[in-house]
Each structure stands twice: as C-alpha cells, then as structure tokens.
Length: 231
Ligand SMILES: C[S@@+](CC[C@H](N)C(=O)[O-])C[C@H]1O[C@@H](n2cnc3c(N)ncnc32)[C@H](O)[C@@H]1O
Image 1 (cartoon, rainbow, N blue to C red):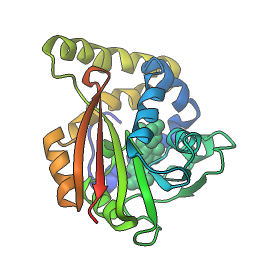
Image 2 (spheres, rainbow, N blue to C red):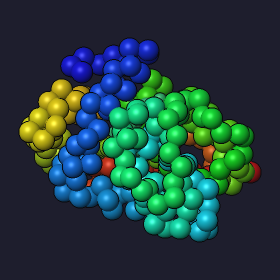
Image 3 (cartoon, rainbow, N blue to C red):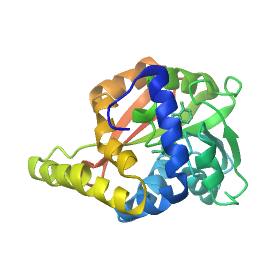
Image 4 (tube, rainbow, N blue to C red):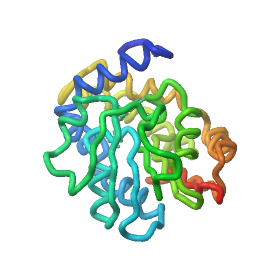
C-alpha cells in the first residue's frame, strides 16, 4: 500500500494487507520492537485494573497477543478481527479465548456485555476512530474499563529525531527483509491517520468515558489511553 487510502478502499486494502503479512506478523513485531511490545501489552491489561475472571474483548485482535495476555492475567478474552489471515495465524491455543471474525465498527455483542476492552495498534488502521469509541461505549457495562494502545512520537526533540529514523527508515527495511516491503512502508505512513493525543482523549470523553488517562510508554514511542465507562 503506497498511498494512504480512505473509506471502503482503506478497509479493503487494510484487510488484504493483514491477510498477506499474517504468517510473519508476530516475528516482525518482536524484532522491530526488540520485544518491548510484550511489556506494552502486559501494561495495557494491568492498567484495566479489573478483577480476575472479567469478560474482556480485544478489538482488532490480530494474532491474539493481547488475548493471550488477558488470559495470562486471569481474564476471559474475546478476540475480534476482520482479517481471517490474522485469526488463522493465531497460535492454535489462545488459552480459552473466543476468536470472532468481525468488523469492530459493528460489534456482534449486546449492550453492556463486557467488563473491559482493549485495542492494540489498530486505531490508525480503521476507516474512522469515532464509530469504534461509540461501539465501545455501547458494549461496556457501566464502570467497564478500556485500554487503547497505539504508536506515538517522543516529545523530546532528540529522541523524536532518533525515533523518526528508526521508525521511518529502519522498520521498513526490517519489514522488507522478513516480510512485505509495502506493508512495512505503510506502517510509519499510517501514523498520519491518528488524531493528536489530546484530540483522541477528547473523543474518548465525548463517547461516554470518564477518568481518561494518557500514559507514555518507552520514552513516548507508544501511548496507552485508559478510561472508564461512565456509570
Ligand atoms: C497492527 S494490527 C494489530 C493486531 C493486534 N491488536 C496486535 O496488537 O498485534 C491491526 C489489526 O487491525 C485489524 N483491523 C483493522 N480494521 C479492522 C476492523 N474494522 N475490524 C476488525 N479488525 C480490523 C487488522 O485486521 C489487524 O489484525
């Protein structure tokens, strides 16, 4: 994907891209983040601060990494993703998780069904963020918790410069060597779809959430937004 599409064209292109890169998706993630992604997912689930046994959906679950972490921390995960390739590439056993092939902008879940929800590195891949937040507010019970994990840029100018070189130049090379050149060129470009952090938090608030917090992880290369469904 060399240009940045929108609407139905983006939906189709994103799904086809993830179907294609699914078999080596986990490997490339571990290599390009130097395994930091494991710690980011652990933190995301911990920040939900939900009691063990909670029913938690992972939206755009991909190969199920967040589902595995949810199960490891004692929750009952439900993973949803529209790429069959990614779901098929999920390790055979994602400890008791239910994995569903669905569009997260139209969740096949009843209102108030969930105690919590996570979403990892998917916001910029959606055709729009607001419909996801509206769906989240619908399917979470009052006081339910949400954790949204996404890429970010460090605020420190030196770190930002170094990160720009790593993310903009080296990551596409790593992706090309291990998987698909175009997909990993799209990765840094897709950041342009993300609303600025302040705007994103305002969107979460206006969707019906309180206690909205923005956490900077690993010197700000990744952001985690946590929030509570208004009671
Ligand atoms: C970068 S991957 C992230 C996968 C996983 N959450 C992780 O942390 O590794 C983005 C995922 O979003 C999924 N996705 C994008 N738009 C979607 C939509 N509208 N409905 C369901 N899944 C979607 C893609 O299929 C892909 O698996």
